[in-house]
Image (cartoon, rainbow, N blue to C red):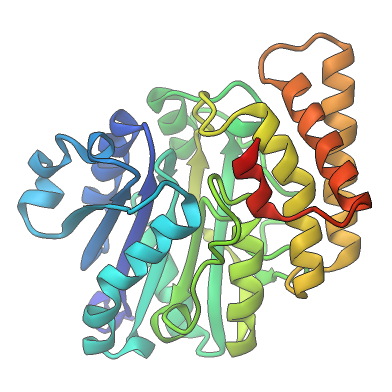
Length: 313
């Protein structure tokens, strides 16, 4: 299948406090074998996108930059959706796809082309998540050179999920928010839930669950990349810990997360925060997360729990 008949790619990136990482992502997107038609970058404030207008992607008109009214993964991604909606509709939404990359995700140079081919070959597929060769969130994060070594094969893969390397349907767990793609018509039919504020913990699960009403969601091993997992919290440990409990409970009640998945997720987070707090592990604010877990659990008992209450902490 020639590149000329492949679906067209659009990209949205929500960023906060990572201008250096955004330059790295822009470099990766400029090297794609299938160039994106448009890249919408939404910062939480002007400083988040400062200097990006001088990158070749912006100078060529492929990248457009904007700031969000408030900071938050969900609202910033929604701003991006609104920025691209008219252009995607004008391009025939069924022949386009929209990719959400984290600012610290590094796609292999053929990520967009492989994604386009997968959509073209499987007309019933509406959502795709790629193969995360290694996830820096699990360790202390990776730099640009380390990410490049994983992609080139110089470093052996350290899979984020226990995938068998085969294309398969994704059920229950949704798509991984650092690298997920949706057909244009499906993506424009929903919006991210802005009741999940700040970091928007599990917003990818919720969005994927609602898009799944339009077709299949799959794991595509040909779409390879590395999540650098850049260190430096976007929100406090206390707030993140609250969201680790409040957001799954909210999504279970909403119906976009299976209760068994949500229960295991919350229980695993509490156990990890407790274990690392007792070990005095200071690589992350585990003690703050544990306090946030406790506040959310107490709120649940008092029927006060809601994701938005994290803004009061």
